[in-house]
Length: 291
Image 1: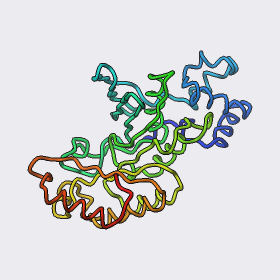
Image 2 (image 1 turned 180 degrees about the horizontal axis):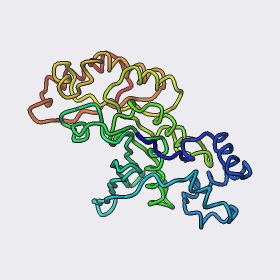
Image 3 (image 1 turned 60 degrees about the horizontal axis):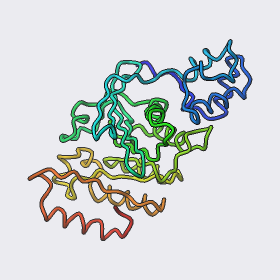
Image 4 (image 1 turned 90 degrees about the horizontal axis):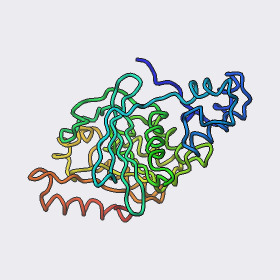
């Protein structure tokens, strides 16, 4: 399987400098490219007037390759909500959603093309997993949306689009670090504005807690009992409800960040009063720190 082209967003500052030197340029050109991409949200070499005319097209071609092409755009809420289907270099499709609110601008980003978790109520899960996204492809969704709302700024990114973010751990972490890094190294978002949603990959939850990143965890639970959750969220057969909630509790204790519990109500499936009461008991006996 071919890999997506390497992109500046997935490189460290030192790696960016090494990449431009390998192209025969001075190391400081890496910072100039970073300023254009992360601060000015520019990818057109014609607008990069501080770069050498003879080499800027090559620099952009190698370090800022086009990773996404809009295949379809849908809007609602008088244009406040925009869903874009992006075609990737290999023809795979992913979606991101831009949501404007009075007090914030949020982007819902995908981490995988498709999803391998197999949840029966989720169309993406039923389609199966095509492949993981690269860190560059993840960041590009955010930057492309940020470009569309400029001069307003994106304040929140939620990894609740296609895919299970923690199943693509390395690329997710690299993308998050690029989103958090102060400009021009990254986009300069606040950690409190980034949320990672997971169906409950317990080892990855603990691993993320140890990274020292102030991001919010959202646990896609949907049932408080193993009997039903085994059906709704098949990974529950590996890490059952008690283990998942304990991991979420550890995440809150380690990071100091509240954990959100996501629960999609499905009529006559998981909407019984006793299940709501059981969920409350399970959360309450693990202490505070839930949303």
